[in-house]
Length: 309
Image (cartoon, rainbow, N blue to C red; front, side):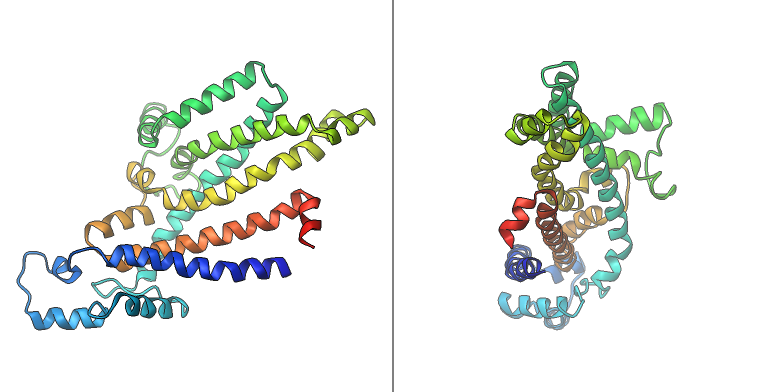
């Protein structure tokens, strides 16, 4: 609990600095959002002045950020330039992206670790070569190529999955886009698991356990694999945030109304509050994932737990 409290205390300045940088990059850009909102229609200067005052655009950037953070600490992500609360706008879209990211994350976890263990236990064999070649191919191919190919072959030609939209709900509408989104991370999970497992199988404690007559399955599962998962857990924890933030292309291919699609539209319309609100939520996800990873270290490796104590 003391360690968790320290990590939470360290997360506060990280959250403040990160959100400030994002806020600065969004609202320090040249251009007037109020003029962009008006489009080609002429708007009286008095109306523009009132709108700028309402959204604090006439104040220094640091003061604007202070108003925003005050609202965040009260659970308010602000409102769009059309008057709609950002939290209300993102409510349904956030659920879509979360389900997509969770599906991709579970796909990475189960299939990636399984392939890594298979390759690690058969180092130098046909299975190991196939896993290494397959993961290299997946890493090299852009995600939009994988997405369109999977959509045409598995969705249209074979009819195994829905090709677009969320009409079939979870998991039906999210399986195919989830596998596409998670394919890149799966390759890294498999490679990390394989490399770490091969290294731990050579360790002294594994040889000692084997010399004592412990069953091979127990040696691998209880000792070697448990320690081998530490770098994998680190990657999976960080990658969940990456999946949430990097779903723009996948959501576009499969026509999923998630936050990635909303951010893309908001950037085009210069809706800065929406962009900053989405990034603020993603920063929270990253911080929570990193905290969970740090706590899992002690579960996987008792030496880390004793060092913290």
